[in-house]
View 1 (spheres, rainbow, N blue to C red):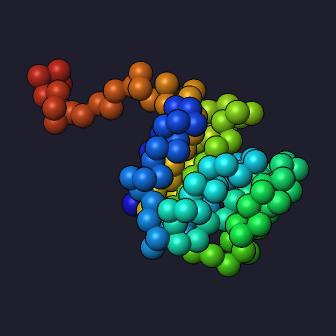
View 2 (view 1 turned 30 degrees about the horizontal axis):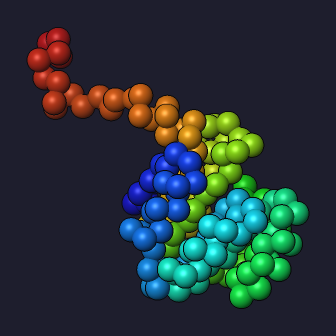
Length: 147
């Protein structure tokens, strides 16, 4: 079962690297942009690949020539799978231009397609939404059940 870790902002997103990534990991970063977080992931992981649908991947590849960057839309899971890696950790930073429904869709696609151990997501809106939710558990709320 894939664990999903929601973060708010780049500071929280990057702080997860020290806790969740080590040299045994093969990490995919979706929405790598200029490559700054991908560079941090590179130092911690055994292998890291950054993808971005925009042109910024060119700059990232020049700044970090030892890291693989590709111009791929993260929603195109088949193209990501064609890279031939077995990613066990996925970092997602697409929230700057997407609503929470798109963020949820991409999480579900990668949960189903590659089944990584962990997906780390940077989405202030989604984390804010989840922070305001409470999961109903009938076992803990027996006194509220009408029989």
